Length: 125
Image (cartoon, rainbow, N blue to C red; front, side):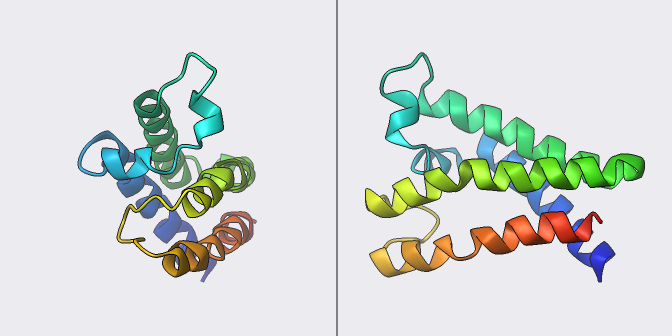
């Protein structure tokens, strides 16, 4: 079961990373917190591109670096925690993306982030 979850996460991360860079770029911009781009040198698109590269890298690393599995899992769990404020910001600012077009859908989605953190940690132990 751990192997299945780990491979599922890896493939999902590669898919998410590629989608950040291509067809879902605008939707991902809706998840970038205003506080991250308001006062700094970053813009939404740069954040989306950078996070897409990181996500694809996590996916590839999970598949190709079995000796580093524990470290990658810990880093991926931390990454899921780090991007959670973007999900909260999307809910608070009522930004529609990925079919999350109601407050209820955006709120329900927030409860899946802890599951991703747990899956990243558990499947790499």
